[in-house]
Image 1 (tube, rainbow, N blue to C red):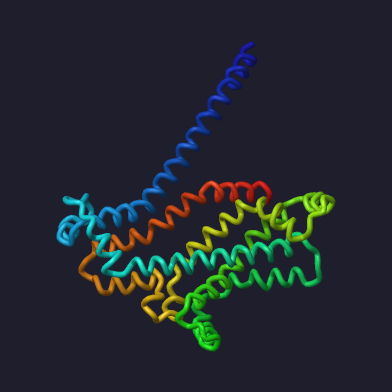
Image 2: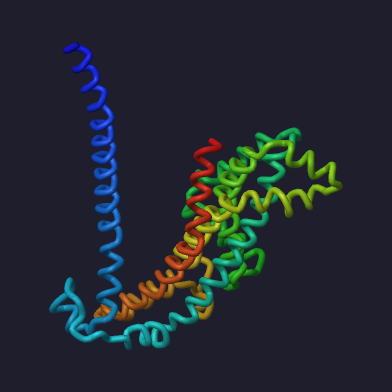
Length: 293
């Protein structure tokens, strides 16, 4: 009887101990995530907070709240430093390169993932190996190529390299995702009279939306923050993108740190908005990819 009682009590305690361990583990994970968010979020908050200060207020109290909220820093950054022109150039070049890279990458991934043909593995490996090529090693050949093509100091001088260097990661993501689809999808579509492009456009592409959202975010952030190609291939100030424009702006406003913070804040806003709009698709793509392997 004593042994039976002890066994029953231990059985009652085990689920309780398991629940406590689970809560403790979850609490520990939350604490780590909160600390990680604070470490990454505080510099952004500090930058935004100081963008509303005067130069004197920033010098005397760089880590406190502004005594007087100054909105003229954003006006100065936008108009005086010509941030508006740089902003438009980055949007045009960045979005144009994203559209071209995603469409061509999706087409290539469709054929690599859903068709069998000779040399398929070699082509896939050749495209993906582009992930290993450092961008800076191609600056001189890229400059000579653009000069021979006669498109230096044009938007195409940036769009073409952005597309080329984002295609490997785009094809890698989309091909891996498309390979997980069952073959019966195409067989049913063919039975219904769908052609190859119709299958791609109406069936495969909508099913790949989560992976496409991830590829779009990666492409857009790479294009938005790119500096080396913009520095080498664009010398006309009217065509400069935000990273290059901000570098010149920081050099001209070395003593006006709040104006610099305001310019950086203006640059950061589109990236945050773009990420928030695509957050659901990104999480869906990551979780589906984890389940499908």
